Image 1 (cartoon, rainbow, N blue to C red):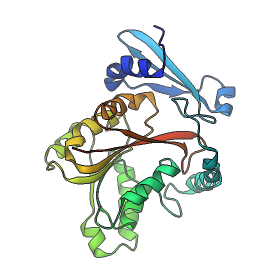
Image 2: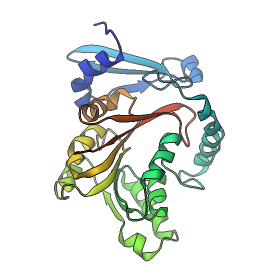
Image 3: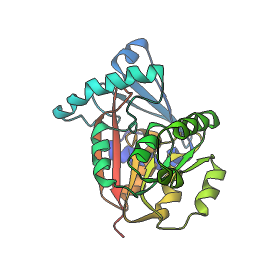
Image 4: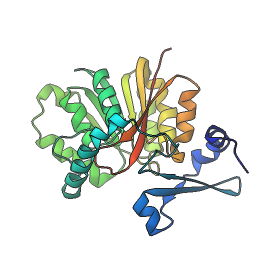
Length: 261
């Protein structure tokens, strides 16, 4: 089937992608050099694909602003740091740099945060004295992050506000069912789709977000996450950032939606 534009492709294929994750890969060594990814999936028995060069644009074809090139050196620096340790020297969320700045203006001490996927973002939230609930699917990474948190110099009040869970799939959804609605000021969805699917994370946590709170979806340009992005677009206005990310030598997208009702 031919699609008139990207929005039509996203809309038509959204339901199929919800439960059938797309596979992302390089088709050749030249593609790897140019950062050209192919994303392929099957919907209703038909094969579909989407291709983009992440050295130039995000998956949806959005280019970065020229001013964003100031983040290229930090992206390279943190990429090299991550080769030695996934916990970098000055932890920040692994999202677009402009999105980090936007989120930084939202947060204040006591902001109640839920994050799907832990790591440098967890430490960043704790350093900002947020009340953090973090859900991590991987047991080994959970232990690594938890050990780091416990050994860091966070004060008792910060640690008393920190809740760290190691769950995936149905256990995660059961955990969310026990959380009261309108509990969080910000929800960051940045976990592994294979274990805590980002689209389901959005669907099952939106009721837990307070009025005026923010839903944040990282890699919102990737086809795997189109269903969640389109769902949020149907509810609220999107604030999109396309640019470089810490620890990554490619262009990505992070989106925000503010719950206004």
